[in-house]
Image 1: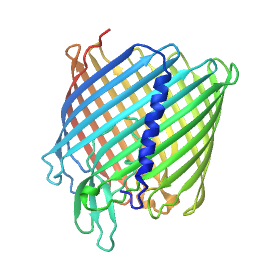
Image 2: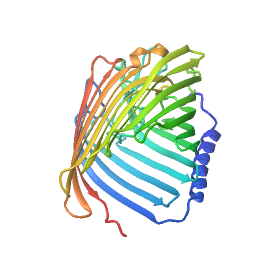
Image 3: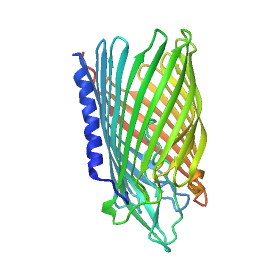
Image 4: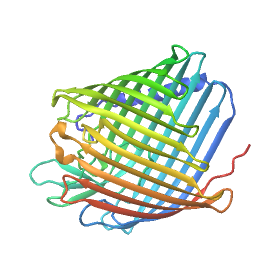
Length: 428
């Protein structure tokens, strides 16, 4: 929850800017056929450590319902796509949870308009989440320290903002409540073809994240923040299979917390990409950053990202290794080392399976609070079987391990679930 709150005008203007940019791109698109792909699912799962705590674990049953719709329109010179999703989860047989209903809403819009030598691109999203928190009240001060509690494993594209929250052993009791998080993102960019092989891309990124726990009666330790970033990327196609690029960026981070001043980060990276075959490609980039703030002075660090993608006859797989520098929920910027793996494969026309892994390590040493660091691992697997053209059943398993340096030990979670999925046949 923000303690030095921004004017609500900022959020209002940011939301209107996102909608305005989306309408501009939509109006620029030529007429074309719309493709609508709705889906729905209902399921239940067993969670053996709902609050993901190292001690006094609580297990429970989670019932989940989700509605989703994808909309897309494609023409020779333009494309627009939207994704809307609503998810409701209810927790049962968990003694420590009284407010047992959680809601999540997500809306994403992307658009592209191509001209003879240039293109305009836009990507924006808004996410609203009800996040369950368990707050440890400290005797010797008015502050409170939040610990991660219940939450289903989210899609791979989910940001790390709440993954970076840490926990504390309570000194004198605890209070359970829900915190509502809202995240707004907008990323417009323009690309211009300098020659047959060279191009330049100008990009801008805006993010606004806020926490609302006013109904709980206790202020949380999360801080609202805004960030602005701009990049310039020069790329050259070296051969039919190889491309190289140079990217320079600047980012402004503006947290609302009393003890977290604004910071400015300059970065530069060199990258190389190669098409290894018709079905496989890779990208590698590396560089450095420099961050200046009134609190910690000047700090420098190394950045890198490597990705391999491969298409198979019935699926695909990817691997990503990266080091990034990004905000967390405490109004700070932290270094994150991350490994992500994913694979989806069709066994037959009616059956498929997926396997994914997400591993990361955070470093908050520049703020002097290394006890907020944590190591995290999450492995997920699913098997889906279609019984008709529209109806299928999906079984899932998820394992989570987290070692929060503030805690006395690590915590684990096992979740086993079963759901029914409905996807209506597409009408041509």
